[in-house]
Amino acid sequence: MNQAILFNDDLRFDEKEDAWCFTAQLSGQIITIYFHSMQLKQLGIIDNCTKFDLEEVAELWFEKNELESNIIHIEMR
Image 1 (cartoon, helix red, strand yellow):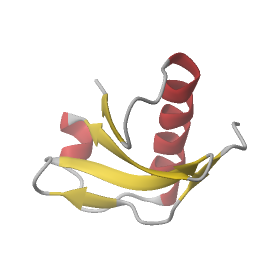
Image 2 (cartoon, rainbow, N blue to C red; image 1 turned 180 degrees about the vertical axis):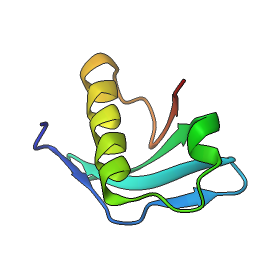
Image 3 (cartoon, one colour; image 1 turned 90 degrees about the vertical axis):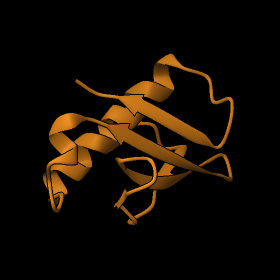
Image 4 (cartoon, rainbow, N blue to C red; image 1 turned 135 degrees about the horizontal axis):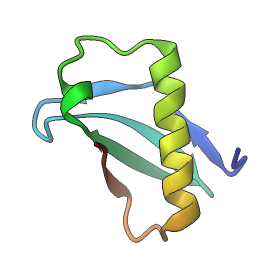
């Protein structure tokens, strides 16, 4: 687990982006992470287990990618 990433407890569905999202802090910078998935989109609520899975997906994204802006879109299959 990357300790430099602090995930906020604000998971919500963003109608405009048509994706679930939450914010996180990385080295003092606030970023918004969007998760695009057909399966997630069908859920009315997301439980804690799935939320932790999304946090892990985000951590893996950070291991493989460089942050270029304060918005991240992660495509999930």
